[in-house]
Amino acid sequence: MNAEIKVFAPASVGNAAVGFDIMGFALDRPGDEVIVRFSDEPGLRITEITGAGGKLPYDPVKNTAGFSALKLLEHLGEDGRGIEMELHKKMPIGSGLGSSAASAVAGVFAVNELLGRPLKKKDLLPFAMQGEFLASGGMHADNVAPCLLGGLLLVRDHESLDVHRLPVPDGMYAAVIYPQVEVLTKDARSILSDAVPLKKFIQQNANLGAFIIGMYNSDIGLIGRALQDVIIEPQRARLIPHFYEVKETALKAGALGCSISGAGPSIFALAASKQIAENAGEAMKRIFSTAGIGHELFISPINQEGAVKL
Image 1 (cartoon, rainbow, N blue to C red):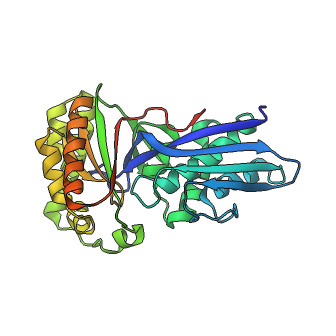
Image 2 (image 1 turned 120 degrees about the horizontal axis):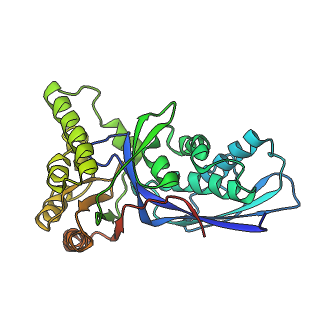
């Protein structure tokens, strides 16, 4: 076993427009880094946190990275093991890019690596989910699963963590823009109606099914026609300044579809190529630049690896 382990867990796009709470995909960047090492002092301690602006607690019971790792250690009967952890946030908090999921995944993945991989990667998912629950109060794997395992994933059932990987056409890229405005997840959920008109329910199911078929058949045209969220996006769009302008300009630049990443405020656009993603991203940037809103742009393929040891 190595004396010190450093890992990276990537950002992710939850919902993927047509799969609210059940679908998400991983990005190459941004993400979180966690460093762990053995210590002579019993128990897990978080010794350093950077990039969080003082927003995250050092108490591992209250920290998503620490809590997921603690749950793994308890499962393995190693909760007395002396371990020091450093958490380096390399992505914005509250961005709609799965920040808490990345921390939870990085924490449990790093400790598993430090202990010599007693569990397979996919078996770490329940522990990462517990870390995510600490932060969000919900058991939703649409960010955690792709962050850990990589790829575009469909979660059939959260309780049993029945997770399935979907194929992605060669060359597909995402442009993801994070406008520096605050959208709280609890607010983004509180505005959602429990009542869904039958017509929209039918259309959303058709879009989800068509999106999956398009991915399996590499049917770019079908993917583009299917990437339409008729239920959640219309309710949340008002929380994000200039959302529809950004969406329109991304589509005009050639993106297959454009919608809200997770609870927002980040917005993602899927494209058939890197060049189109870059064009769409630059077009999206211009909207926020003109409006005087700070922003960050990320261009990435669908990350198929998820969490990795550095």
